[in-house]
Each structure stands twice: as structure tokens, then as C-alpha cells.
Image: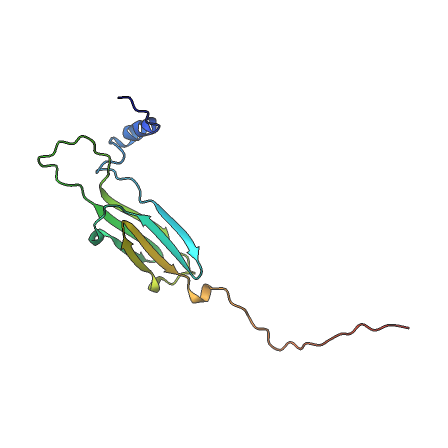
Length: 146
């Protein structure tokens, strides 16, 4: 059976540069994520299908948010692999947090293979209306000069 693989050339170059097959247990691919702002917080969603929830770690240190996870393959003992396309190993993503977030109130959940991290915007960074004091309002009427 012939199959067309549009990524074959890219995988070949990666194997030549890295000395191993990209996406194998020795060289897992990246952790795909989405990041968006919703009201007074940011939401980060990272795809981690098949990852043991106990291996997921979210930490903040010196303004850097770090996400770590581990996925293991089943034992090779007594197994004859026909195809092995799912990668395993350690995953890590790091993001620099700005001064406008409240790092003490970051929370995370892991559900159905998706890690969701909620990053609140610091109250001091939220837009607010500034009242002007000491200004007197007066009405100026247009007069006729006849």
C-alpha cells in the first residue's frame, strides 16, 4: 500500500540533525497550547492526552510559569510493535509572566487530557476610572453682542 506523507522530508531532516526520529520516546514533540484573555484573567489550555495527572506539575518562580508532564509507554515486554507513532517522555513549557498578573492566585485543573491554567490579572493592573477632584464646573452661555 502506498501512502503519501507530506512531512516525510521534514522528518528526514530532523533525523539527520538530531540523530534520532523526531516524536519518539527519546525526542517528544512540544506541548500544544492556547492562551487567551477573558475578562480579568488569562486562560492557558495545554493538550496533554494520555498523561498521568500525577505527573503534571505547574509552578511559578521569579516571574516564569513552568508546565511539566510525563507520559510513559506501556512495557515493550512481549510486544511486537506494528506502529509506534505516539510519543512519550517529558514535556515542558515555560512562559514569562508580566508584572500585571497575580502569581499568588494562579490555579490549574486537568480534565480529559487538557491542562487549564487560570492566571488572574493583578488588581493594580486592571483598568479603573480616576475621579477628578477640585475641578469646578461652570456653564458658559453664549450671548449676543448687539
